[in-house]
Length: 189
Image 1 (cartoon, rainbow, N blue to C red):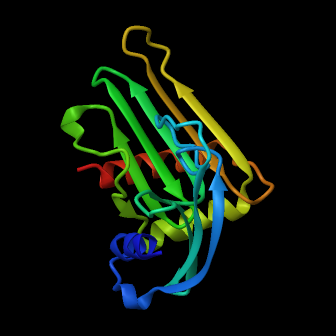
Image 2 (image 1 turned 90 degrees about the vertical axis):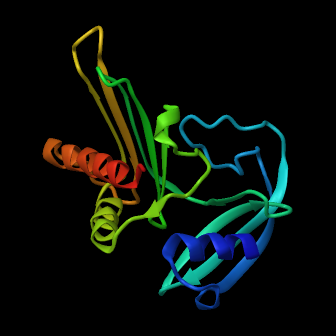
């Protein structure tokens, strides 16, 4: 519990005494990633005993998953993934946005200095409002763009896991992709 509370406090810049524990439940997770699939992350295929922890801060609830000793703590619900690879610059960038608004940015270049397991930021209030609008309006959305060039082909893919039943028009699809790239660029050191 303490590790999840500390992660939420660090992510949102609030003191731990402003976070309330809503519930804790013992769970056997199906793999080393605690049942959360993330791009570029390989998971051990063994049952991992742990906990589902629900916290409340700033009027919102946040779900975390941990292993038994709390050495692994992850936000529970991946809501958006974005990947960019190729191009002259040799991009290989990943962004994961959780339903809570927490963000992981992962770059493959050593110079990027981004660790795959470190939470780097949270969405701003304006970003969260826009993101929640898309999450409510749209269901599962997949976007793929590929540059036709062969030698330095750029590929961008995005998946949004919304709770609505709509699908975005092309302009909205592009807006979601631009949003993800903007968040990645802001988070990346």
